Amino acid sequence: MAIKWIVRHGAMRLMGDYDAAHTTYVKGATVIIQTPRGQESGEILCESNENTLKWLIDSTVGTIVREATPQDVQQIAQNKKLEAKALETCASLSEKRGIPLAMVDVELLFGAERLIFYYLSESRIDFRDLVKDLAREFQTRIEMRQIGIRDEAKLLADFGDCGKPVCCNSHMIEMPPVSMKMARMQKASLDPAKISGRCGRLKCCLRFEQDVYDLHQKELPDVGASITTEKGKGRVLAQEILSRRLLVEFEDGRRISIMHSEVIKTSAN
Image (tube, rainbow, N blue to C red; front, side):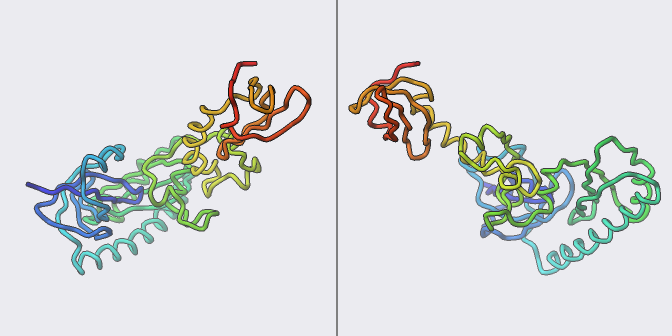
């Protein structure tokens, strides 16, 4: 029975479930895989099972051809040099043709079947002549892929304010929606410079913590609700969600911070 492995590959950190013929790999091993795009290099993450598969989104499929040999590693390094040349060449050719193109990154598949250019643009661009120029220069299939500002960070960003590699460049599979409502609920600074990631958008870590805030907030009386405690009756003025505390104004004018566990009865205001 063939063993399957979860493999990460490509500039956009694609992940997929890949067949292997009775071979054991260690986490982090570099492998050569066959995907619908062509022959690529990838990284072994773990053995495939029901638990790992449920986390995959838009999973790629294919086969592990072999573990990378020293010659393969040299080829991967050589491809990186060719990618740098391709990026410069594309920028030069697009400038000559007057194409408003902001190049972000380029990816040459291991087997050289395809050269993929990632770019930013606010409008649609006619690439036909540029693609012909590039195909003539590099003798392979050319693909132009427009990306967004968050994808640019996924390709190029290194470390976040926390000092760790940015999440979109490491473990994230999809880009979650993030809103100012989440920042306000978590009592984060509303200064855009402090809550924005390398992409200039709201930090993804706000979304990571939101499920915990939502869960705890459902268990707390709403702001404005009337409550009864051993200290008397009062009205909820504010919530401290993670510490599960409430700021309460009692009927005699006292304002006291209490634990949620001290609430005996809650009624809508």
